[in-house]
Length: 257
Image 1 (cartoon, one colour):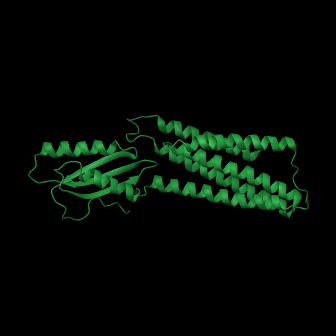
Image 2 (cartoon, one colour):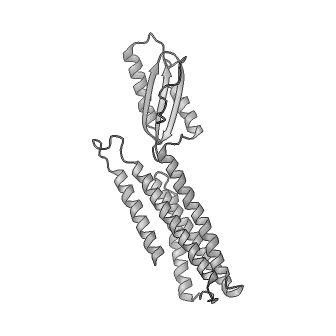
């Protein structure tokens, strides 16, 4: 009962944060609220990891208790579990087909874990009646450890996204190629940075043009490059800086204190 209630609460939190992230308040949040979706995923993952810990505790209690009676699997229970497995499979396939939302990907992970939990739990419950009574709690511990590891990794990955981990190297190569081939007036690409702000990334590109080029032309070229970079689905914002040489120390160092 407590597990089901916690599952519902975690799902509500994820839905609420996802809807809040979709609402734009440009004056109050100039860069949008897309990161709320990542925050919701972190909270959801943490709650699911907590439920896995509770499952480990309950399984250990069962192993240490004097009651050695294996769980009873009735026809009614079997039918209910099979229906739940079918529904979870359909939901998993549907959520897994949607690639654009981090919240939906989190729900897909949840449905996958529920499929594993229910199917392996059913198998271990059957084995506890045919092989040994302790098969069910041991299976519960092993499943809980797997799910705990899965949600802990999910939470850690999303924390790295919201902190600002660099983008994938292949994406950086794509940005570099897009920048250098954008216009013949761009002589060199000095620096390309892309770092996550949640699911999306911020892009910073330093390009080099001829020092004699008119200001209006360098502005128009850099602005069109900015628009092109921001048209990529992974990019939240792009910043293009124009320089006349690349023989200088790295700019825009992060503050360390």
